[in-house]
Image (cartoon, rainbow, N blue to C red; front, side, top):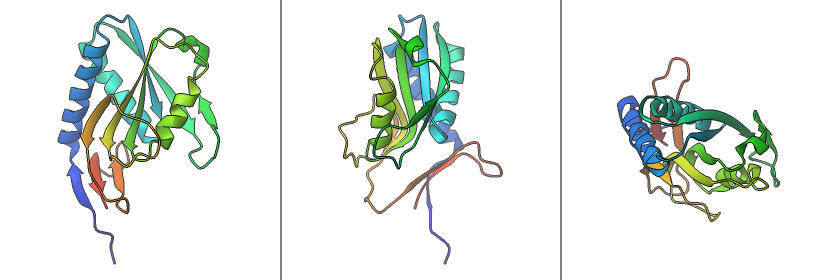
Length: 169
């Protein structure tokens, strides 16, 4: 029996959410010279790249894309990063993921920056599911979605043969 999935956001709606989030990031950081946008691989990095592209067109500051790969199954922080974390010192970092569910992924993402004195650390997610078991909130969310815990949110972006979409299954 095929799995039933409900379309929550289509390509155009995703773009509208990302545009709004980019303007919110701009407003929050208008006086900065540079911000760092750290995307959690894989889909958080796609969203981070799209936010960076929008900001490059509208913001007076420059932005740099960083990638964080986390072992989400580990009971301790296991991260691979493509940057020198000390280069983030006294800068604004926007930590980006696709879906905020329990908060564990973003909490691990915070851990990457724990030993660095940041100017600001903000979070951005496309979908906030409101099922947090970690004390994590989002600063910039595309959409807050109340779901039952058994449901799953699929974000499809940059995948061959499929158009950008968010599904609930």
